Amino acid sequence: MFSRSSLVAKSLSRHVAAHQRRFASTKTIKEALGEVIPAKQARLRQFKAEHGQAVLGEVKVEHVIGGMRGLKAMLWESSVLDPMEASLIGIRFHGLTIPDCQKVLPAAPGGKEIIAESMLWLLLTGKVPTEAETRQLSRELAERGELPDYIVQLLDSLPTTLHPMTQLGMAVAALNKESAFAAAYERGIKKSEYWTYALEDSLNLLARLPAIAARIFRNVYAPEKPIASLDKDLDLVGNYVNMLGYGDNQDLTEYLRLYIAIHGDHEGGNASAHTAHLVGSTLSDPYLAYSAALFALAGPLHGLANQEVLRWQLNMQKEIGDNVSHDDIKEFLWRTLKSGQVVPGYGHGVLRNPDPRFIALQQFCETRPELLKDPVIQLVKKTYDVAPAVLKEHGKTKNPYPNVDAASGCVLYHYGLTQFKYYTVIFGVSRALGAITQLVWARALGLPIERPKSLSMDAMESIIKSS
Ligand SMILES: CC(C)(COP(=O)(O)OP(=O)(O)OC[C@H]1O[C@@H](n2cnc3c(N)ncnc32)[C@H](O)[C@@H]1OP(=O)(O)O)[C@@H](O)C(=O)NCCC(=O)NCCS
Image (cartoon, rainbow, N blue to C red; front, side, top):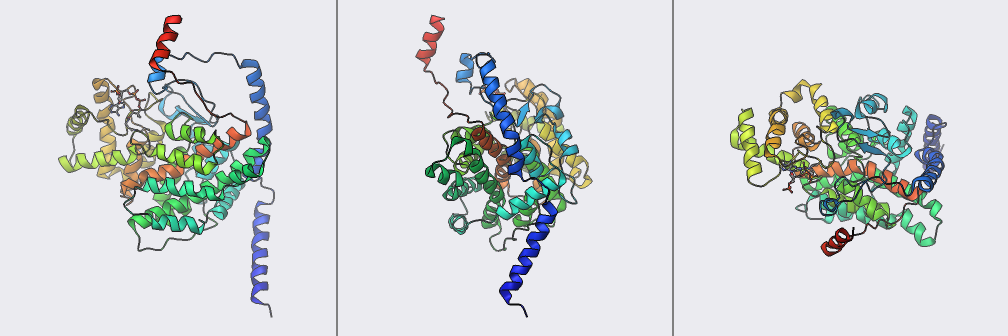
């Protein structure tokens, strides 16, 4: 006869043995990163020594008063946008375009789309992970994904009328109670060790985002239903969709895998990524840095645009009815512009072509006839047919083409995720991929606290006079 505790111990050791067998020769993300850091540190040292005084561009008055648009002033390795490249190659993640990533990055078992884990591996290490490395990272994240009790209590105590993004930012900030980085800093650690603690916090943060985000959704929109537990054999987004209560919808799961992976990083200058970088540069821990980023994401010119797009489209449909013609849309666009509002989902701070992520999401729709029949998705396509010409004629925006948000929410709506105030939370789960990559690398490279020089108008005038 075996005692209950010896049975538990036996089953645990069988589980651990199976786990070790499966991943015995597979590097962890920390080991893979540890291998590439020394070379990059050396490269940066040499680059600074050789080219520290080289000029990359001018700083004009219009940069100072124009939101620093186009100013080259930030190191960000994981992705680069090219404003003028043809749509699908306008963004590269360590040199790979979205179609390249779709070819080489591992999908979930049984799935086709890129997943957050394979994208994170690429962003962090600059290398394409193997299938086994991807699975191991999925398992590692699932094992880190449970929420501490105090976070559950915090979320459950918030009014359901509080915007989901406010709730997300609050819960992420509160996770800093557990920060390995903050504790190690307080103990006193060498600068060369910063990145390991930043990575520890970053992986815990990413792993817990789905449970936080799903709990917000369930508290606000479906409080009566229990939330599914984390499945250690599922990928991050598979678990997220399960906890949201849509786990039986494989198409939605695949859509969210793609959306979260390709939306994860978008250069460093966008407001959320830049905020995480700025706050992280003060050596605030990754939880505090990313919660600040989430509040930048909550602005309607940034992440909130995906909720605004849907609201704008549904208003148009409500006013005009189901049979919306191109002329109707033109008229509605002009009405929006003449009332001094922006057309949500159009324009971009850097790109000057249709957003490659918009194209990738459109391609996802094209492979599914049921999506193409959906009136809201048809409206996205019809709006794309006429909006660029209207925005060009209006003459203000430098980029009259759609950005990712023009399409992202409509597919969620089709699959029954109709609570569009929640959409930016999904974006918030996604953007962590790029933000944590930079937080870890900024510590590994020893980047300093960010501190640009501001100028008053008097100061600018005197610089201009004296030159
Ligand atoms: C994304 C966005 C914030 C970029 O801003 P930006 O870099 O300042 O863009 P531009 O340089 O092209 O802006 C120049 C002018 O065009 C206007 N403009 C830009 N996009 C516009 C749009 N979609 N509809 C109407 N006007 C727009 C700007 O408000 C600005 O007007 P102003 O001179 O009166 O201030 C802007 O295009 C926008 O507000 N888009 C709608 C919101 C959205 O979809 N955000 C998601 C971004 S991924």
